[in-house]
Length: 166
Image (tube, rainbow, N blue to C red; front, side, top):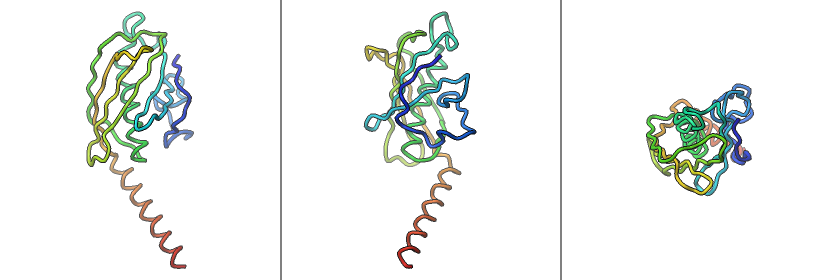
């Protein structure tokens, strides 16, 4: 079973009936139910994984660590943009052994003010802040979501102008 930090940073789709993300949905019985906390311009999540997520006995599967890094980086980008962004590439480096039953945290940062793909970085840290894994990734804003947000902003601006003229 996964244990995570208190949900201090709600995601745009939190509470939706159709939200079943393996990484962050609290209602997916097979998922990790990661919850995120923002600290300054970074986003993090704490987790403890059990034997359901291991590869070798007692060792957390590297793919699960990749998923946690992607979730943390991707959700940071989403919270900054206000709409979804898709992972276009990701690279992992495994520097230590992450074991089941121990507490870890993943902390992500992302470039600001970028147009086009957004670069992000994450680290998986143990209880002593030793780096167990790192990830770098690129995220592309989801074009339809971006267009919908721009249309909504234009509509709100038009409504504000009409209200001022009335």
